[in-house]
Image (cartoon, rainbow, N blue to C red):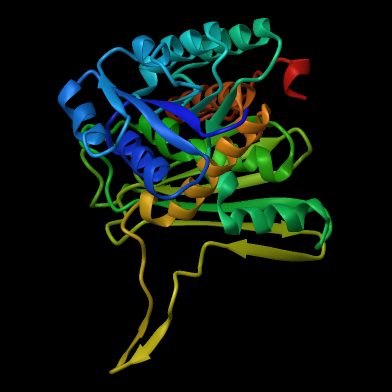
Length: 337
């Protein structure tokens, strides 16, 4: 398309508001046309300062508003299926925050709906694929800089879990990123999951097993472990080390300026994922806008969201039973190869 891309943003919570700011102030080639949220006042608070942007409470009405060329979905996961289906019916390209949907059954319905249209419309918001460090690691693995990758070691630490967080949510909301980057970095599917639990941290809420060690097996014989610690108490840390035949490559340790002064040494740790991956979010949305204006779709899509949901389901079973649980994925459809 020619001209500026008009975007309907669905959801005005933390992520939706950040994306509205990003489109309005950071990236090029797009403008916010509509913001929709069940809380109309919250949507209006975002659009009041933007010329030409309007607010509403109905996602479908937002998609039908004048000047809308594409949709950014940042509403809660349970609302994604209806919003995605409405976008498909209108042929609108979509950037959808993860999860695609909260479970494999609904994700499969979305996958089937997109396939019926005969073309990809969705870029899914697995933003780590747009992080500079992860992109550099992916490039090294792709060109075989250190031989064939054999294992990955992931670390995922949060300051604190949200109130009421469950074991299953730690997989669906946090470890899902390690699921996606494992599939992406190694270019293969996860075939089995096991979850191991040390003695819980004293900082973990009652009833939550934290930390956890999650082990993935892949179709190509890799072993991948993830330390998931969602109440570490000191900051937000994400790292990944690839162990290859002739060397290793690690990302995630650089946190800016490292200081030695007055009897101390060290740097800083980000307080949360928005700060750690700010550049990745910017790059992700810019790439989506650029691709949409060209009439193409890039990056992770509906298949990746469905595959992640299936692995999460196996992971929840592994949490519950303590056993190794196979991942049952069908053959990847032709549209996503």
